[in-house]
Amino acid sequence: MTRTPRHLLLWTVTAGLLAGALDLFYATGFWALKGVPAQRILQSIAAGLMGKGAFAGGAASAALGLALHLAMTTAMATAYAMAALAWPRLRGHVWLHGPLYGLLLYAVMNLVVLPLSAVPGKPVTDPVWIVCSIVVHMVLVGLPIAWCVQRAFARVTARASGRVQPRTTS
Image (tube, rainbow, N blue to C red):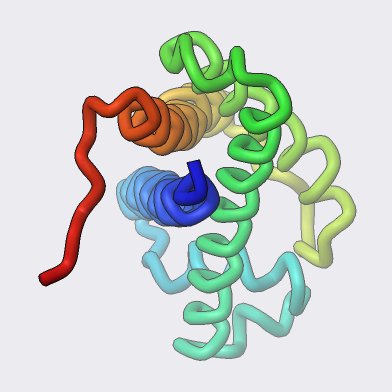
């Protein structure tokens, strides 16, 4: 059981990066259909910190937006992993807990984080964007996070029961 933190950390980082990448693929794809370049999407993420100046920052502010987005999704995965440590029930029923967690994340991001950020202008009110974003947060953000965290605990449980042999170095 001494390996739990390492496995949990690796799976949590994997969850955050996977959820972040899937969310970005969705957002850049959705807005590309409306003629918005990917760099602008990443700059809009950086605008949460930089305000309107992010849109004049070129590739540097886009890179900052990418880093911020992946840091946020990794923090989201970490929060789920910490909750799963406290509430073992979250380690199972991935198909239920993942989408519910994604729905919670959507609500927190749109009702708390974005209003408190430096993003200029009004929130996007396109109903197609809103509905698709809710589904994406449930399926492409919450579900991978819950699945990865469940995998971390499943590996530890299998190792503790003797079903998985520890790796040895020669």
